[in-house]
Length: 250
Image 1 (cartoon, rainbow, N blue to C red):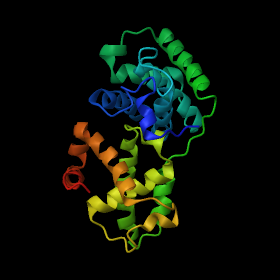
Image 2: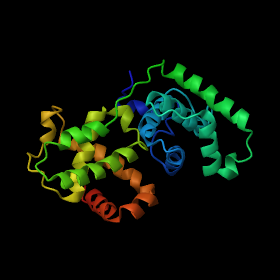
Image 3: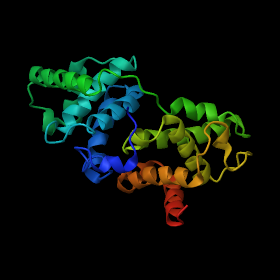
Image 4: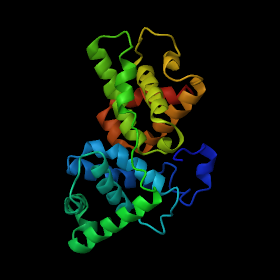
């Protein structure tokens, strides 16, 4: 029910939203900022999936993205067993964006978030369990013929890519296992690591997954970095390799 074929995403209510733009990045970064503020990183993957799924059925005109983002965080916190009180999310939002939310009535703010939570539940038909790519990164990397520090470094880079894939619509198109394979492959490529396995090492886990398809997924994630000054500053070397990789049409 929750997987879409890529062309279909051009016909949904929020088709202008679901592709990566500077405005989309700003919105998703708003969600990330809140998560960092309330120390709830385990919720971001789940919240992002809720967020993207919601706008497959609704428009931005109906529901402002900022309130939906907070509702997704509130709901995801419960599901991922890292619950946060609604008033704490309100406090985080007011601290992160004081000029926007600082003067907003707190009680009305709480009511608004709890109201959007009910709409989220109805939209997703109470089907709230999601599978994320993170554990697959760890499981798949265990077969690499590398030292433990080398594997940890590779997984760390892949983990960052998975985090940032939340700013794309990959979760609507591909299963988490496929995303994990693609972003491990991206890490291996940009770090120029020899993992000591056949080129299509993922065949053991997922059959009929072509190099072209994996590269397409990687390019979708890489394109999001075009609007991320944060990534270029934090990971300058990886960012440089990504630019070279994209220019070469890998």
